[in-house]
Figure (spheres, rainbow, N blue to C red):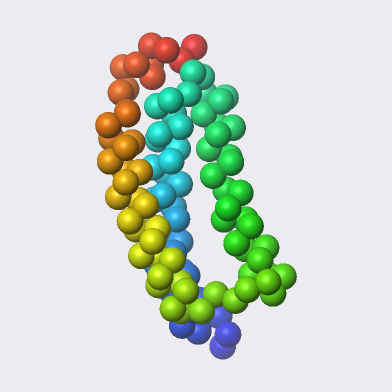
Length: 102
């Protein structure tokens, strides 16, 4: 069936885990820089906007994800994850977050 074509498998097994990891690392950065939990949550919600834009473009027929585009996108996201994880690890200070947030 259509649900098990190569593009769907690339999206499910490559892009979804990488986008989840990227979102997590961005949320860690947002939490480290925010003054309170609400502002961290609001900033983290903005992370979803590009993902929703890609989905809307795919559903509306603006562009079509192919296996090649999915693999190239996964490679780009993996590189971005490396930088955001390093940045997040450098910024994260649990004690500061616990004492600063009210």
